[in-house]
Structures are given as structure tokens and as C-alpha cells.
Length: 317
Image 1 (cartoon, rainbow, N blue to C red):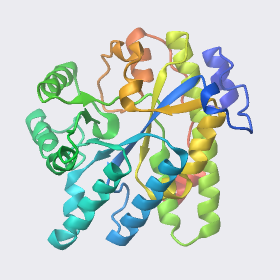
Image 2: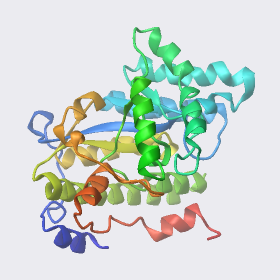
Image 3: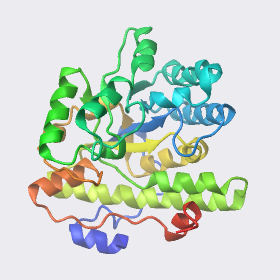
Image 4: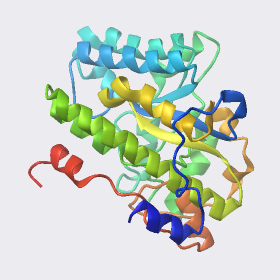
């Protein structure tokens, strides 16, 4: 669906107004968004340690330069991919997040989906997902507080969803929802596949920023439809080379849209996150979409990723 049709469907001007070319000053920004980054130490295809060190360094440099708070969600199974010799260096990648003043959360050990994983097995994967992270946090007087569902899948049915959420609460973990979901992972996979083709990578990066801009407009319209106001939003990204190279441009795009960046803690203070959510099923999606489904609010199609980017990512399809 085109951006114009989308705006008409939601009867709002949030998409129709073009993004300003000038950033909004931080103290004038009326919108807020928390940055959350999944699949630490690195998402996407496996890469050697040196590559992961470069991506981590550059990703954190963008956040520090922009003075943006963030939380990274860890798959601790990835700490073992290089064997015992590399494990300390991979753990050091997580320490770099804490040294930068950022937070870390649990994203399970091996990134299973609750849709097709037995509940007890899934719970065990969660328990095995943060011993190292908790040890690192304990050294600074803290502990893991947030959990992010892999694939944003909360379970195949209400019984599983409710049982898991009750168990999480007993474990002292808080669900980290997402309002700005997207296909960023696809652009990142295509960017990775482009390898040394710098012209193609530049084209993918440009398409990525444009796509994320349109996606932001979609969710701005939907939150107005549901709440009649701007809510504190939560953006889902991943630890990958695309963001390591271009996160500064993405943050600038959100600033031009009038956003200032807040912590996940601050975002969850918004009463919108007390909204009832009964959605279950295979598809992972934004909590804004889940709340709409629960309320029976018709959903316009979200912005579609670029077909040519999908062809780069999956040339055999």
C-alpha cells in the first residue's frame, strides 16, 4: 500500500506531512521513542570476531555521539560460536555496552519462537539466556530486568501466552514491547549480502532510511487512531553492519520527525502500555497493531519493503 493510500485509510495527516529537512531541537521535540537493539552480540549471518568487534564499536559510537540511550537484548548462545578461545572476547562485546552506559536484556539463549517451542523448553531457554549478562550487570550493582520475545511471538494461544507471562513475572522479568516494528532486518541482510559492492550498499542504505521514514509515519497515524495522542514509542532494531554504518542517519530521521530519545524505563511509564492485548498467533507484530486487533480497529497495511532489496537478500526466491 502506498503512503498516500495509507494516510487516507487512517484518516490522519501524520504521513501526508513531509519530513522536515531540519532536525527539531531536543527541547522542542514533542514525540518520544526508546531505542532497543536485538540479537546481541550480532544479528544476521555468522561473522568472525573481528567483524563483530567492528560492528559493536561503530554501533556504540553512533549512540554515544548522538547521546541516545538504548538497551541491547542478548542471545547468550552466540557467545559460544567461536569456541572457548573466543568466548572472553565475545563477552567483552557485551561489556562494551555497559561501559557505554547502556542497558542489556534477555532475548533467550538461542532465539527460539514461542509459537512452536514447548513452553517448558522455551522457559529453560530464557533461564539460560542471561547468566553472563547478569554477572556483568551485577558488577555495577544491577541485574537483567527486561525480556524481549524472539520474532515478537508471544505464543500460539492465550493459554500459553498467559502462562508464560505469569512465569516471567515470577522470574522478575518485564516484557519489552515494540510499537515501531519493521523490516529493518531484511535491509540489513541485503546490506550484508552486498559485501564489497559499495554502490549497492549505498543504495540499500538510502532505501532503508526512506522505508523507516514511511514506517514511522504509519505508526504515528495508528497511535493517533488508537489513543488520540502521541504515546511514548519503542523502536525495534538489530545489531548489524547496516546500523553500524548508518545509525546516525536513522537517528537524524527520527529527530526530523520531532522525536527525542528516552530510555525503555521512561517509555513504559506511558499508560498506553497498560492497554489490554489478547493477540496470539504465528505473526509477530507491533503492540500498536495488537491493541488495534484487540479493539476491533481495522488495520491498514503497513509500508512494504522494497522488492529489489528482497531480491538482493534472497536472490534464489
